[in-house]
Length: 279
Image (cartoon, rainbow, N blue to C red; front, side):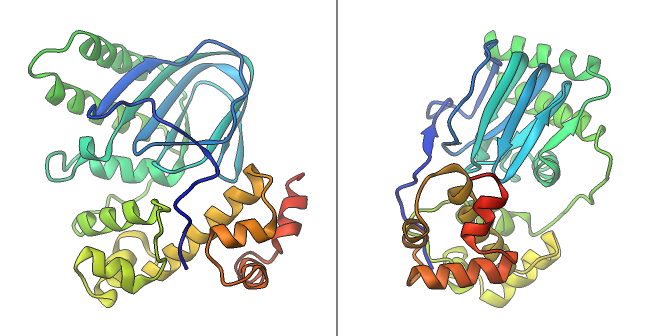
């Protein structure tokens, strides 16, 4: 199984190459955006004011500030705002959190990826950090890259303190697992089989499965299945493509194979899933 290299979703790039980091204020306008993906960077959105809804992949999340959203590269999202928003948008590329240079920052990103949205019961510490990051970003010095990494690390740690559940911090093996998840997010003529990923990563399929189980609790094949189903749901919810078109895009041998696969994994046919979600 492979993914077509041409995505049906609008691809937005708000972080120009070779920049690794950017901070800006959330645009203070009421808007409805089309489902879109971001080009190879993480996005942290801290909303202090506003109302409406935020679609993130298959979740429609009510906006109830103050709150933070965390998006990974390749995620599909869009906004349905009904009140003027105020807040900050922080963007950074995977190289910014490279565990070789930022060993304490990468695990924080891993933890935020598990929740995606966090309610902020106290905004003073978070806004103070964002103000400091904004000042450093707008008036850079030769030490700014180090300062920005440090401030970002503290910001993510502060946001994680507001989580209602505590996830264990993973150590070791993250380099291979991170490279695997990076490959998994890229729908570029990618053969979605364990041996294919293992070959690219220079490890055996058995070793890759063991690493994935130790870091995430799921095998590589289970993570691949999750990604295929997630990609299927993205297309079903956020495009008007037919079942045949989606099956072809996800490189199933035929539409009936796609329907059987989707129903086996979700308990619903693709058409039923669309109807359940008002489409």
